Amino acid sequence: MPKISDILSTLRQENRLRAIPSEAGERMLDLSSNDYLSLAQRCDEFREEFLDRFSDASFSSSASRLLSTKQKHHNELEEYLSTLYGKPALLFNSGYHANVGCIGALSLPSTLILCDKLIHASVVDGLRIAGSEFKRFPHNDMAKLRRILEKESGNHERIVIVVESIYSMDGDTAPLDDLVAIRKEYPETMLYVDEAHAFGVRGNKGLGLAEELNLINEIDLLIGTFGKAAASSGAFAVCSDELKSLLVNTARPFIFSTALPPVNMAWTRLMVEKITGMTEERKNLATLSRYFSDNIAHISGNPTGSDSQIIPYLTGDAAKALAIASRLREAGIIALPIRRPTVPPGGERIRFSLGAAMTPEMLRPTLDLLKSIRNEI
Image 1 (cartoon, one colour):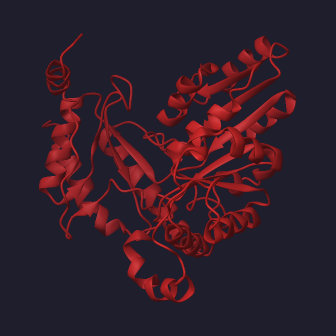
Image 2: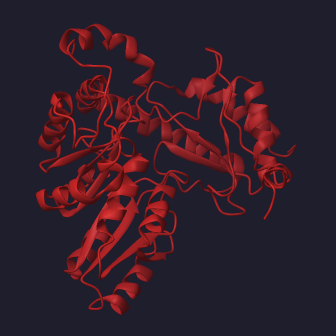
Image 3: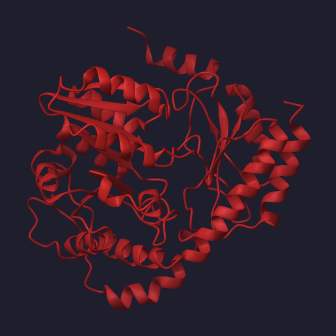
């Protein structure tokens, strides 16, 4: 059995040893945050309104949702989300809890789960914990997905296709139109879409890529999170009444976790209300993302592949990613290196996350520095 010290030593030698980042100065430009609408930066603007509307929201939560009798703000948030999506909603404590819980609940007998190769680690953990029968198909490869379905159709009571709408490391999007068409071809299939990085930033009301493409009603289970664009914490699932009842009764992270405090649910409600009207911020973020992605492609000599606010600068080497991140930080720019196991070997990168309040002028020093050091490191 390897010693802990040996494991840590190996990680250090491979330039994969992680540490919690230190507090950043106020003058630093943070390009690592998931504050996509820059709402977290504006929290003080909403303080008075929040305290006036939600003065009764408790800071304490001492039981799970299935035990507590005081859930006014949880229920109101679920009802508000249900109104927005036109389907029932169920709250979870985080996106990780939501994916682990929903995958576990869906791992019923005679169920096969088909996952995109680049699906989030929380889904992978859910599959492993539940002992699910699953297969993975190459990223966004609809031809391969069809071949698997042709082979497996009729062998299972249900087949669940699991994708992200915006992928967290590459910033590209799933072909939801194609996936919906495939779902219709195979009646036993269900479509599960994680909108963690699309909630708030895509769609007329910010409900995600499914809203943008008018596909909400074609998706069986939709996951959203509040810890990114919504400047809060927690997550939610949107689904049918029957599926919600299944989750309430079998999703273990929901059943066995103490609920988030009511004050958090009230704050989330306010943030989601603000999000629905942030059309101009979404437009600005989209324009800024295209600008930054085009410039990164010019500097690296390769297309980024991104069509979102998440833009990778591939290095293909962990040491190089660390060195670039260090040079950026010295210049007052926070952009963290992404290494194995988050990405596969050779996929090491700097992952840039943009916010709606940023401007091209704010981003120009980052681009200039990357250009100046591209042949040095």
